[in-house]
View (cartoon, one colour):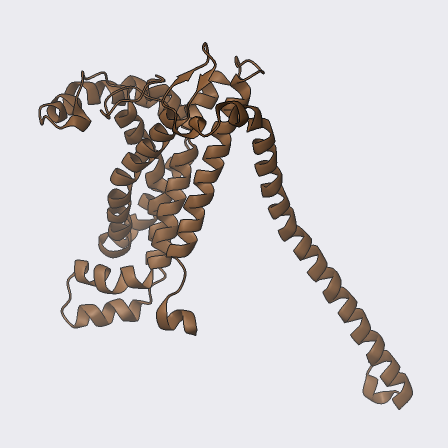
Length: 322
């Protein structure tokens, strides 16, 4: 066996120095390669941002700040205001989270705290399989199944309340229906993440709380949620990211109307649905730059959401000082 201790002192020193130099070279190469991978992602993001900005610049230059607060989107008149699409994107995403977050929380809490052990894996797998359903299937189902149900049963009841957000005729399609479809698409992602982070809570903490006489809700509220706050927020933001960028499902049921209405039952548009409907037939003079401008706005909205998620998940107080 080759052992440095059995060699002469000079030979052992040279061999040791050669090994140290070789390991240092390998470490530098590994560090350079991994740094290159990280920089590749940043360069890709910067490239996307610069390409969107350069392609959208003609529309931003001609319309000026009015592009961001204008309420008219008329390709025939070459007048482009992004407020309609921005409002539709934010409204549908908010509706989706409004319904998806509590349902996902209930699913995750049931699977981890109350569900019989033999059913946990089958139910969890079934929920995760919903995430693999193509978005166009959700769109077709929403248009031909969900929209008529909402039009017949839900919209008349909400219109009867007299609230301005539920005014207008029950059309079935619209911003509200698009948000409902998005909520069904968001639930599998959010519920799966919540279930996984709930399972990371040490059993001894929950067993101690149960031993003190706490109910299941008290254990979840006082033990599970504080312990898994970062993961829960991450799951919600993952669902929000899915809702913001969804295209085909929203395009089927949002109504695709370039108008701004206070009622959630009115047809509207989102950034993604506008791009899907108009990009193929857009003129290269002003229409295509305006669509690139919408893409730039969606990119910025997504970046702001991710930055907000990072701020919410950052350790605070004593945990941050450690």
